[in-house]
Length: 427
Image (cartoon, rainbow, N blue to C red; front, side, top):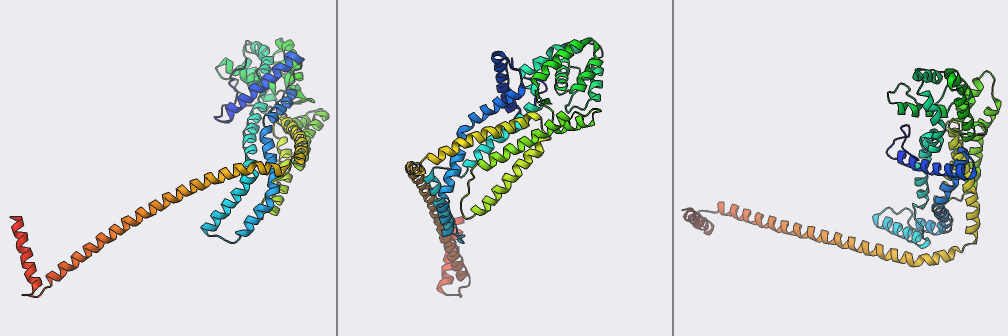
């Protein structure tokens, strides 16, 4: 039964994704074990990769469709950009944006269509790193391989110190705490450690626990079928495998060669896939984008080569298998897009484009009406404020004239009447 293990990554975003991916891989592992008699995590990774890319195929299809249609609409986009070249006023910029959007609507694609695939792929890739780094924490079927041996180890007096000595003597990239008070937690740490232990480490474990030699040997034999790909521990990194084998008294050239080949195969598979994948470039900057894509197509495989030395072998297997699956998909898609009638697709999109344009026109009209209403209200308030201000100025000027009126004049007599009325009104 699949459960939540103490050593699983508990990140808020990648943690749940990693557990879901681990659950799927555990189901694949159980199926292969029960119905095919095969217990091998590397094969599970390959089948899991096919499953992931099968699920993502609709997005892959849309991405490739975007690339094909964008190349066809490139002359129209270029014409619009040329039409408004050098015009920076708001009206021209808005008109250019609307005409560009009309072209996208005509071809039935979105400017953001090519980004969706990457946004979905990246979380899966980072979560898979967590799964492959510590497979027993996510694939319950693999964890059970160690359960019997670990339950015997924790019953032996002083097992914590003995496990610590074996850990200190072997360079294993894993965080453990054999001194923890929680026995279940310590058991999980022991499984983490044993899962990544090399042949020399298993020998040291037998020396530390001589009474468990048979259990240790049977667990190691079972693990050699489950956790290895061409004699490589899939949770270990090629770099660590190379350095460990190189520093050993008797150099294991077989492991060194295979550990070097794994990143190289990942690199070559990425190169082949990049060359077969069509790219989308539109507008006046098409040449610049083409150069950028060429640079990226060169750098991405090199980055894969570099990272493949420092990440678990299992992740390199996923990259290689993914490139193979994508290449197969690309062959099918290229043949498919060669046969389809792009003009027919454009015709079907015209009605949808018309509806979108009408909808945007209604929304734009409402926005303009709201803006005009706001402008009129502002103007009315301004006019009222101006009238009030003019009236106040007139009254102030009249008061000044009355004060400066000559004695005996009509204005002075009017002031005397005003003062008399004010006195009577206060009584």
